[in-house]
Length: 246
Image (cartoon, rainbow, N blue to C red; front, side):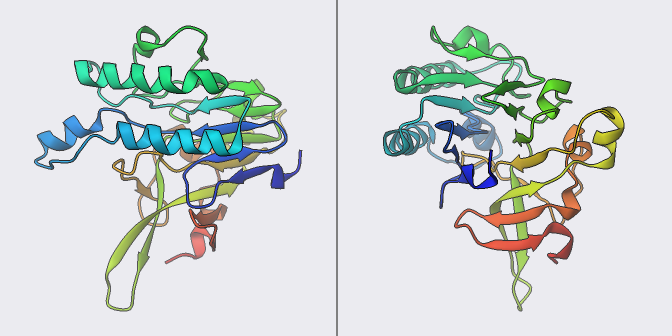
C-alpha cells in the first residue's frame, strides 16, 4: 500500500483509506457537555452536528467499512441517560452505510451495552483491518497490530501551539505522521518499524495536547517518535517536524 492511499480528508478530522474504502474517525466523546457544564461552561450538544458531518462524509466517499477509533462516549464510569441515548442514536444512524468497527478507548467502558446488532467491537489492544493496524492508543497494541506497515492511532487529541509576534497563542488540531520510538522497537524486537498516523479528535469540544509544548504520557509516547513526527494542519498545511516548531 502506498502512503498516498492513506489520506486525511481536507478540513475534516477524518481519515480515508482509498484503496480499501475505509473511513475512520476518532474521539467523538459523546456526552462531554456534562463535564463542561460542571465546570461552568454552557455548551450545546455536539452529537447532532457530528452525526450530520459524518453522514455527509459517508455519502460523499461511500466507504465499505467505517472505523470508530475509540472514545465514542465520554463519561466514566457512569453515563447519563441522554449520553446513552445519543450514543445509540449515532450508531444506529450510521450502521446502515457500511460495516462498523469499534476500537474501544479509555472512555468506552460498558459500551458493549449500547451497541446495535451487527457492529463489530474489537479488543482495546487493537486489530488489523485490511492489512492496516488500528488501536485507540491508551494501551500497548498487540504485536499483530504493530507488525502492519501502517498503524493508525488516536487518544491524545493532538494539537499544535502557535505563537504570533505579539505572543498570542492559538491551538490548532493537527495530524501526526511518524515512525516508532526506540521503546517500541525494544518491546517488539522482531517487528519492522511501522508508519504511524495519529488522528485529531472529531469532537471540536475535546481540546487536546499541544505536541510541541506539553509532555505526552502513557504508551502513546513510547509508540511514536513524537519529536521527529511530521505535523499537518486540518487544511493540509505541512508544518515540518514537531521538534522544529517553537
